[in-house]
Image (cartoon, rainbow, N blue to C red; front, side, top):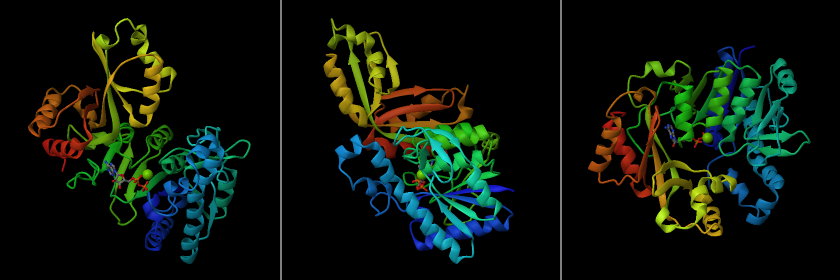
Length: 399
Ligand code: ADP
Ligand code: MG
């Protein structure tokens, strides 16, 4: 049995017209000799009635924080609705199908509510359904604990569900359907000339996903890579071939830079020794942050100061921790970390210079930089982000 996982994102299941297109993809998979297994997200995006954020707004902030088990059960409802509504559409087209919650599909997790981790997958029920030629339609983004409580897998978690199920069933392929043609050289909402990347390696796309390109969840890439299952990103609305992610991907692309992405909502922190004389806590700053679960990046350490960034969500916690250790610091809010990604940049001289020149010609102030063998990061102000990404995209001829 050739199993094909087909995951459909929020916009793909949001209207009856779109759900008809989903049914076309399922019929096509069957015609090509595959046994499809669907994974669906909640209908629509932020602001729409059954989207995850809308469900979350139904309960109080305090209750939400103190009752994570309840919050996860509420959050899981959006995807459950989608499974039944999708089955309605598939049935009209003569497809024998059955809706399943994540737990019914056998996804067993720990009890780290809102960000649960996979323990195992019980494939018995799925295999028996597939054995009867019935298409399972699984609610994404959710699992169940060993004692039967519903959990969720974190934002964008339906991609993770698709990869988990794909690996457990040893699927031939995992297709992720969304509202763009595939992975592009930049977010097409920011760069109108962004072009489709037809083939890309797991490691490069992991970098893309990890650095803010929300088109695919980094965990999903990791799971598919470990299971050695090709991952495809496709558009529900057309028949374009999309992006194929596998181990050979990087050989096909000749550009030094593959693409550009960014992480918004960064805050740059500078802690100077001169502001913290006689405070020994200055020297254990990073231990203090780690003990308080504040993750930092773009770390630059100089003899007289330490510079790094944190997520704005952690700012309040950071402020109170610094206060309790009597550490003085300066901050710049509203920053974005731009990542210029390309595994072929290793050993090529002059790329950083090109980036710095390009941004300075646009009068964009660079607050910080960092680099690895496959990525160069530049911290800029949020207001400059779109201009910077567009300028760099042009500079490296990615359009
Ligand atoms: P879904 O609901 O289908 O999971 P998402 O909103 O999670 O869809 O992901 C699709 C969106 O990702 C696109 O609409 C696009 O704006 C955004 N995106 C960000 N970076 C990229 C990129 N490099 N290539 C393609 N899409 C991107
Ligand atoms: Mg998504």
